Image 1 (cartoon, rainbow, N blue to C red):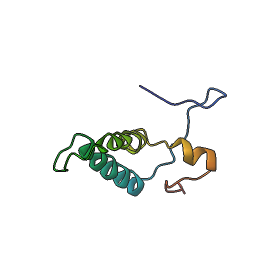
Image 2: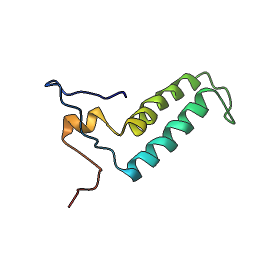
Image 3: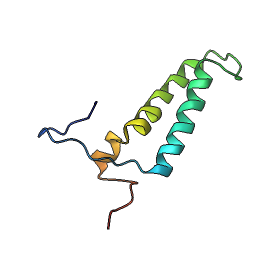
Image 4: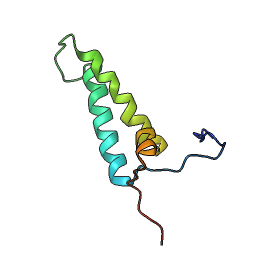
Length: 79
């Protein structure tokens, strides 16, 4: 199993909640579809759609490094 680790060797805590994950997946898929292009005209700027890999990856892993740096989380608190 692939896990991102902190500098001290402990696993990173998930900080991307369910609603955030759904939005990231939708945005990622739309951007990648623009890159391919599926249903979008070829503009010469379609390569920018490959940026969609980032929100898709963070959604699938449940960890956003930018959120970690800023101390943010969209996960529900337990208890």
